[in-house]
Length: 223
Image 1 (cartoon, rainbow, N blue to C red):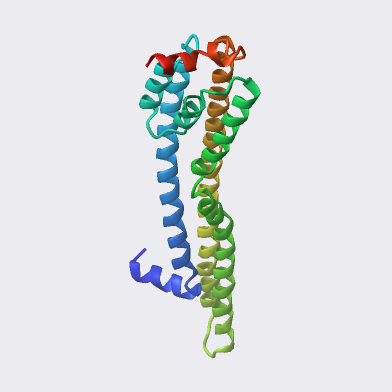
Image 2 (cartoon, rainbow, N blue to C red):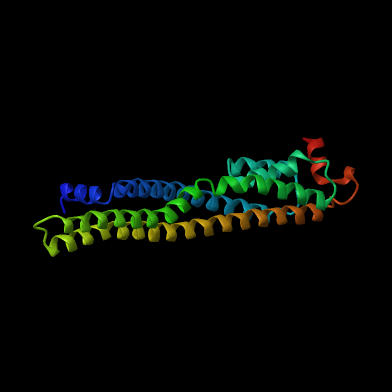
């Protein structure tokens, strides 16, 4: 299949094949970028959760070390809440603060996903539109003298390529969209798990006692 033939098919579809090629490039860019980003965040977050699970109680120095390890991971924001508010001596207040931090981080996890979702929805519609335009051109030949049925059927077959391309883009994009959405869901579960671990260790540290006995406040005083 030569490049010239492809350009003829694209022209017969009203140029929609060019738009679908652009749509495919956008979808692939989002898949690669989000896939690599979410993979790194999941791997780093899993390590953070494992280290926090080994902590006997909340201490300022240990949490600060975990924040340094976490770097730019969203998990660092949750760890930072506990350090930034050592005056908190109520589990429910800490839980609300941590939930607020999670809500701030979630939009960063599914960023650009709307572009992939749009590509999955728009590609079949563009393919159908290109097929309709191509069939208009094919049946227009019936009104011209000297046209043969094979020319018309060949034009219809070429017009259906647009629909096939649109469905292919949608199927590939749907598979990766569901996979990326599942990774986002698992990441949110990681953050919720970290939140609960911090709350549990906050209680084990005796943080519900008067503020002067809070382990984080003592660690800050002694540092």
